[in-house]
Each structure stands twice: as structure tokens, then as C-alpha cells.
Image (tube, rainbow, N blue to C red; front, side, top):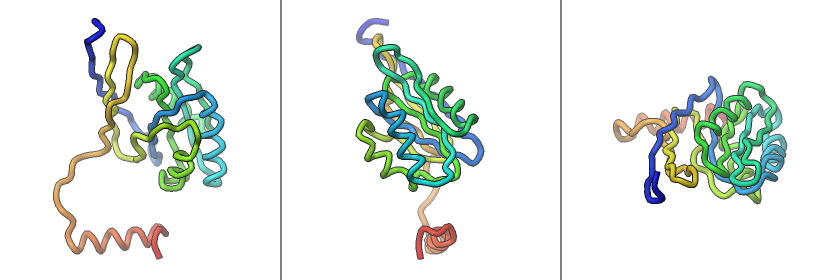
Length: 165
């Protein structure tokens, strides 16, 4: 591969049943402990697995979690993506909305690419130096426009799950 060549990869990420995934970028190994603390102090009973790709030094996949299945999936996914400073977080017993602000406020977090339970594909560019996430496909394209009945269902759903009065 010459220095000008870029190879694209589409990484499909299976989501474990009942889980959500968050993928982002962070810049320091301290993130592992800081994100762990942000999660366990945000939602009592949250289950999660977290993995972070170091971009220099030992270049290890650093990880933490309190759920063996989710931790294993986070490590596998981080390895498949292979981009430095990328993190993968699978959660259960919580929704992304419960932790997004806390994650954004972790000093080391640079950006979040996705937070979803939908099927995910990560678009990765590979150069001679390494890999970078250039985008994420979250779910599927729209098939229509919301009707008045759809609006009613949306509002009822939000109240049913306790997000609106």
C-alpha cells in the first residue's frame, strides 16, 4: 500500500439481545476507569462491557465491564474495527439516553459516533499508518413520513416508558 492508498472496510457489528451499543473516540487510557465510574454512578444496575484501542505505546485493547458477555463482545468489536483511540461500549439495563451526557462529560471523550440498538455497520478507512472510523450506518433508511396516527403512537410510547408525563 502506498502512502496515498486508502482501503475501505465495512464492519458489521452484531448487537447482543437486549443490548445497546455506543461507539466513540477517546484519547487516553485513563478513559477506561473514568468511563467505568461514569456508568456505574449514572444508572444503578447497569450491565456493560467496554473496550478501548490504544493508539500508541503497547497498543493494547484495554477493557473493563461487569458483564462477561458484553465485555467479550466489546473486545471482539474493538479488535474488528482496529482504529486507534476508538472505544466500544455495550450496555443492558439502561438506555443510551441515561448515560450520554455523562459520557460526553468524561474529560478524555472526543466524540461519539453512535448510540443505538439498531444493526450497525462501521465504515473504516485503512492507510499505511493505521485505521480510522469515517462513519457509522445506524439501522435502515426511512420508508415514509410520519402521519398523525404515527405521532399519536410516538407520544403514547414515550409516556408508556416514562420519558414524558
